[in-house]
Image 1 (cartoon, rainbow, N blue to C red):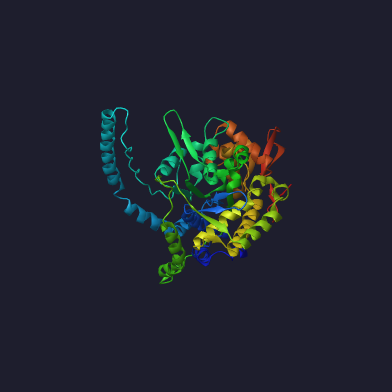
Image 2 (image 1 turned 90 degrees about the horizontal axis):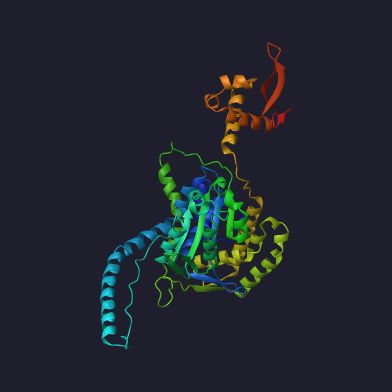
Amino acid sequence: MDKRFDRLPKEMLEAMAVLQELHAAPDSMALQVILGTVNLAAQAHYNVDSGIYHHRPISLFLMGLAPTGALKSTLTREARAGIDRFVDQLRSRLENDVIRYKLEEKKFKAAEAQYLKDMDAGGNFLPPALPTPPKPVQGYDCMISKATLNGIIEVLKCQSWTGLFSSEAGEFFSGHAFKGREANNGLEMITFLTKLWDGDTVDKITGLENTKLWNRRLMMLFLLQTETVQEVLNNKLFSDQGFIHRILITQTDQYTKPAWDVDKENFLEDLDVIRQYMEPFHKKVFDLCNRPIRIRENSHFELNPITIKMSPTAFRILGHWRNANRNRGSEDLKNYAGFAERLHEHALRIAATLAAFENWDTIQDNHARAAIDLMDYYCEQRLQMEVGVVNTDPIATDGVRRLYDWIRQNNWSGTKRELSQRGPKWYRDLGIDQKNRILENIVKSDLVIPREIRNSNNVPVILLEMASVDNTGSTLQ
């Protein structure tokens, strides 16, 4: 495990170690699911006093880029057991809330009718007090895996906090909110999420609806394949708006999963024994969720979070680190200048999350140092990140790969006509334009070499041959 994780609370470290022992989870995946789980549980309880730029939420936006088969769903399920237990308890507690609402609504309507009657009877004199509408039915959607803008608003109308918590978040970024015909596709969703990260009021104003939500909290943990989010991460509009710079991103390459010792008699029991080492982590997450949250007076779901301050030592530690990194937006992080401008706030939110997990109401120096270590790791991940650009012709690209694999496996050479007659069936079934596009790309890629020869009738034809390959994998021409 990366040494920069050593200052994390021991329960978090133990949980990450279990994920690595059970599933060989790389640091870049284990960190995101464990930190994300803690932040989901903590975000509703606390703001953090920056000391300079006022109070800030502690919600984090986390994204883990990982290839298919990286056990994204498995790792998320392992990490969120404490959250799941809290949701089960909350659901049980609220199972009669619909009945409560209907009874209170009936009572309210009766009081409303009496109020109107008294007002009519009293002339210009109003009755002493307006009847109070019932509290809406409380929700318990603490983790949303699929969401639209309207869907998130509906959730936050009837509860104080939630998390976009998904191991298959590609559907979110390929959904309607990020698609369409306008140049600013997704901007409404991005603006909404950015406002929530900042702790601002969010609203939805249309001809049919006027909704304003104050002091709600939303964090994000998305694990997804790079290809599904390329377009969003490369979108200059989203970057300029600041959404991308608010995300802490890691990237995972393909990795070797552990072999299952299925011949061992107690193999499954041994796995359960290993899982038990995560129980202290799950318990602390559950207990953190279960702490009473503070709600503003005369409000049903508007948060009034406790403010975590920094100890004088922690303030100096984070301040010195901020000063040392203040110019990175014009240096090594110049391609991520907006992210570089927010390094201190990212670190502050992480430090507050760790303090909340350990039940401190003040950020201690060890929380500050742990947050700095993680931010150094996240900066390294950002600098090494390979997102690429969107493939505008994926069918042709896939065709090149598949045709080259067939040519190599069959050690084939021949003319374009012979390929159309004797090549793989899927290729023979293509139209002329598609065949020509694939052949053009495979030649441009130097995977196949065209050579002019003469046939039996002494007519010039083009012979296609597989390029020679040396033992390093490079083509030799």
